[in-house]
Image 1 (tube, rainbow, N blue to C red):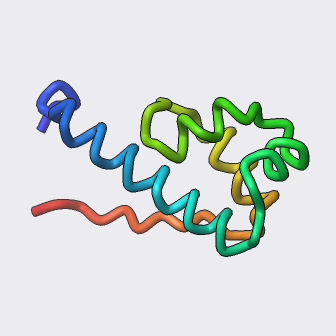
Image 2: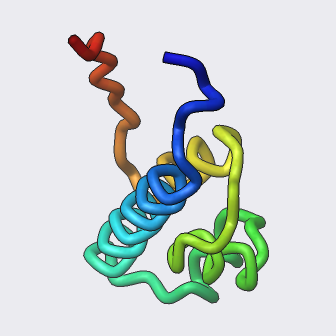
Length: 81
């Protein structure tokens, strides 16, 4: 499988799922978007777009979320048959 064979729909779906989960974690910690922005130096607009699945963010942002929301990033990289 080539990276070119991955559909845009699949990428958008994954981005939306990650954003949804980040929002759930933030809310479970009792933080508003403004509070997270103030603590993490991630812009409020960026946080809103990430959580809505509308921002194609990099690993650095994910690491910052993890640090300030107190969760560990784990990957389950499994080869597809």
